[in-house]
Structures are given as C-alpha cells and as structure tokens.
Image (spheres, rainbow, N blue to C red):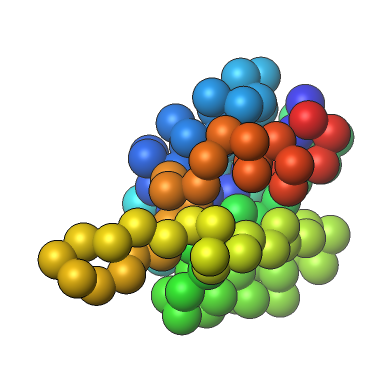
Length: 111
C-alpha cells in the first residue's frame, strides 16, 4: 500500500479517486505537530512507500521541506502548477484537488 501526506480532505478525495487503496495522512493545512508526526510514523510502518503530495505553492513547499527534513525516507511527488491550477475571481489557485485524474494517474508512482 502507498501512503500520501496531503494538506486536506479535498486532496485526499482527489487522490483516492485514482488510488482507492492508498493510506492518507491529512495535515489539515500546513500543520506539522505531534499528532501529524504520529500519523506519519504510523504510515511509515504500515505502507510500502510514503510520499509528500502538497500543493505547488509556497505553503505546500514549506511543509513538504519540513517533513522531508524530519523524515529523509519520504520523497515529494512534484506537481506541475499548470496542471493544478484553478481560476477563482480572476486569480489562480493551485492545489492537488484541482489536478485531473489523468494527470494524477501519470504522476503518482505505481498507479
């Protein structure tokens, strides 16, 4: 089983649509406290591989680097901002939840 560390429930639902058997650690934003550390350590125990799958923006980059510093065995799956973009009120928002299923199938390992 593959594990993914994601920022929120919307990210989990999007990834689950292409990898229904995956295990998820949901950060609920960019939180990385004791509760999240315990969940990551559990994922490392029960999953074959665990990946960071955060939004291609500054907060996503920041939390991904913190996680990878604490857990060097975890790798980040890079997300192309152009494939994770949504327009809201004439501004772009970037997020894993905006990626197409086809893009995720091509990007996620082992799918």
